[in-house]
Amino acid sequence: MASSDGSGLDDWSGKVAVACEELKNVKDLWVFGYGSLIWKQGFPYVESRPGYVKGYMRRFWQASTDHRGRPEFPGRVVTLVPEEKSITWGRVFRVAEKDRENVINYLDVREKGGYSQRVEPVYGKDGSSFGKALFYLGTKDSKAFVDSPSNADTAKIIAKAEGPSGKNVDYLNALHDSLDKMEVDDPHVKNLYELVLKFRTNKTLHIK
Image (cartoon, rainbow, N blue to C red; front, side, top):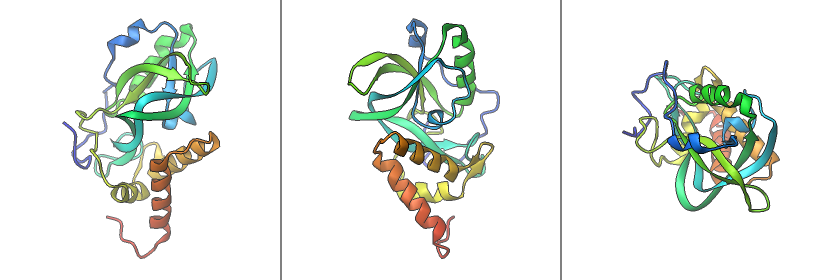
């Protein structure tokens, strides 16, 4: 069950992402990255290009205790939330068949923090689909999913949280800068970036 604030989570030690049966039927493996995979892949690939999936919006609604936060103070990272009329841009990576199993195993561990595998068509700049891609998202029934928080509350957490992979604010900044370089306009990410900058420079603001 989703948590209202991400509290009560462990660090996911020994866990892996929830598998998707449809992945077995995908012949050529593409991986769609919409968060840290855009700038930090950690796996071999033979091709990379911008791409998007339909029917989802990117939101900082996933509590993180294994990367950008800790069990006592979970950070916030992105997930994809179903939204019929939305599209989400990211980067798509084609994986060689010889690397397929190792890459999936690596990602299953990396995305263990309440994420599930998902397979959807992925589209390029010309609007045509060039295959189906594997990506990971936090579903509403996951205990790490934080349902519809305010941007202000989320920004305050990001401004302070830190975990094994580093400061939460560094994650937000890297995502903001990566999308900017790709010329992707994401109002949610931009608003959080501006709020966190405000909170971190306003020395009179008390961040709980």
